[in-house]
Length: 158
Image (tube, rainbow, N blue to C red; front, side):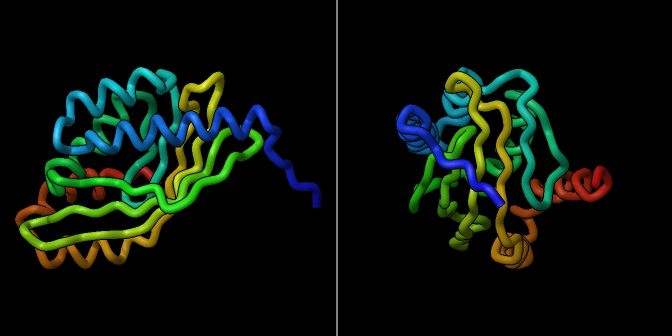
């Protein structure tokens, strides 16, 4: 089996993207409109976005749909980049998401794989164990009500 390695140019592009990602998440849920504007500037209109517990969505409108419900349930949601690497078509980021849901802390780790075209997000696939988020939802039922419609829609579309 042959593996594709990132060239020096791809590594530089990935490094720039990670810096952008960190700037966007420094805003996070504290200013959702700014977050969405920043993200939309670097997202192709038809970019495919997938993650556990949700139906696939596309483009900036899909990002708003995914993250809008998360920000409603976890208004102080933040992301820390733990490590990252360039790929032949973009970047992979290991991240830690954290905030409070219903007054209780919640945190989980994920790996986000970004496909980039000329610096733009063409696709994002997030991989994570949904158990920590599910546990937090069970302990904060009122806050989790904001996430349930999105999750039910995701199950129906699989």
